[in-house]
Amino acid sequence: MKSVQVILLTGMVTISSVLLAQTKAAMTFTSSADLAKAKSKYLAPSDKDKQEIKNIIGASSAAYLKGETDAILKSYSDQSIELYPNQMVNAGPGNIRNRLKSQFKYGSFTKMDRTVEFIEGVGPIALAWGKTKSAFKSSSDGKLYYDDRNDIFLLRKQEDGQWKILVHHWQSDEVGSGPASDDSVRIRQLIDNWSFPIKSGEVLSQEHLENYVANYSPQAVEILPNQWSNFGIANIRLRNAGAIGVTWAQCTGYNFDVNSFATIGAEGFSKRAVAWGIGDHSNYPKGSDKLSQYLFPWAMILTKESDDQWRILVYHFFLE
Image (cartoon, rainbow, N blue to C red; front, side):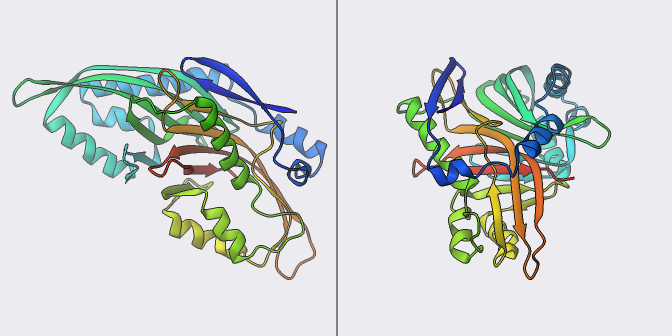
């Protein structure tokens, strides 16, 4: 029996569950030594990391109050993106700068209270989430516009050792409906479907690929190890199509020993969640009998869509 922690803004509960099937339970890391090595290499964020991340987010928030666009962007990666509440993407510091300049042209913030509720992650990837309460004063009529929202930040440690914001996604602070435990089960199912797309010894086919991309939102963003972004489900399908015909010895991105997930919300939960872990891929390339194996940290932002289904909105992984 395995347990997964579901962390709500109102507290923490532990949900016990059995792995989906014996075949999936067998699909763990190639060896316990490899798993131990991966765990020791790709650690959870340290207290120092967490404080640095809080400082970065805090500095960005303070810069909003001053209307200092350059100071805000100092916290962002060169390949950073924003995801609006409707899941539209604003890609690159240049476009983020344009949004900020346009906003500051029409007024200024008189309040920007941002709290970081939780920070988790693995290796050079971290997820931070919390809440923002803000007030924006219109320069034309002096009217104040108040906003309460949930924030998710996906951060990446850069080559110079500094944490930078790679993705910022936000949504209004509205509560979903239905029991939280039901969403927890659905999130587990989604991650399991993504984690075990193919059985050991199978050759990746178009059917495997379609089942895999069905786990993604149509607006999904796949962020590669070099922090380049691949936008939309069509491009995600195209990138992964190169693996058709490959014989997989093992393909899993989720192992209950080293992974957890959390939902975000007020008085229960909302329509976003995050997940993180260490993946294990090993395969025999086309025309080769030599096993190719790699372990990699990854993180996700998940979304509950209009059809009431959970899907992957952002996926980022790291390879050395």
